[in-house]
View 1 (tube, helix red, strand yellow):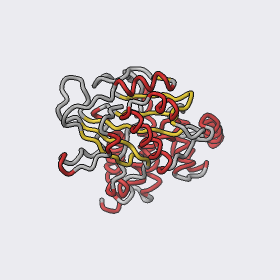
View 2: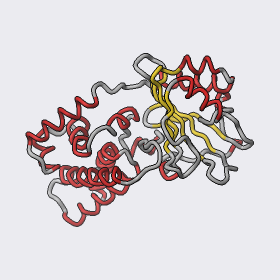
View 3: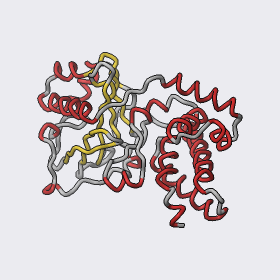
View 4: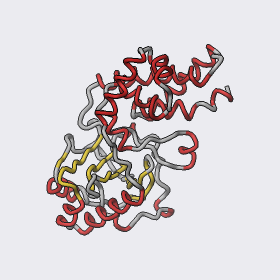
Amino acid sequence: MNALNDHRPLIWGLAYRITGSAQDADEISQEALVRAIEHQPAEPRPWLYKVAANLARDQLRRRRRTPYRGPWLPEPIADVETAIARHEVASMALLIAMERLPPTQRAVLVLRDVMELDTAETAAMLGMTEANVRVSHHRARRTLGQVPAPQPGETGALLTALLTAIAAGDVEQICSLLAEDSVSLADADGRVSAQGVPVRGPQRIARLLLGLATPLPGDRFVFISVNGLPALQAERPGASGRAPRQWVFQVLPAPDGRIGQLLSFLHPDKLGHIPTLAPASDEAAPPEASRSRP
């Protein structure tokens, strides 16, 4: 079992990239390892890749057939040391972009471009012909185009500037930080109060942010790293009813260097890989975040 467990980070990363769900990746990697124990394959890694890729592809199909209230976002992963050791985290920008792909194209792209398998190996794992793998791979790359690779420094500066403008109530400054085609997405599935549809454009997003920037006693904020980029983690221990108790807020740059996407992760079941904050006395929340609840 120990030898098989050495493969867990790779198959977890494979499943996470295909499904966009850390919960699914946990279950898929565990199921793949259990099956490996039962079958004792001569070459564990390719066998586990095959099982995990097909389980992930099937799970993605089921998830997309399930009704979901409001925008769906990939599950965020906090980049703490243990998480980096266990999981090879994918960028949020890439995971969001891959949501445009059908399940098979997504599985092909991950196996070919991330796991670096050749066409024949990918075909064998997914039960496809090599010709179909080549076509699916080409179509996936064409659909995605050039996915930006935001840098932590750039993203952190934009996030800090936005939080500072929100704290100051400066509509003009907020709008200047947002790209003309910027969009704000909140993933809650109706579990907690949140915007139910994408909000587009600087003026509308600015009004939304300022409308949510009312702190309550006990609110706690801290900067963390999520999927390789800075984010704001917030907790409201005294929340009641449908108000969120915990959320994560992250921005992604647009090609012009301004903010293109504002992401609010609110679904309580999708924050399992985000550690809870330390007690208030031990925190070092950034002052510019003290009024913000995007």
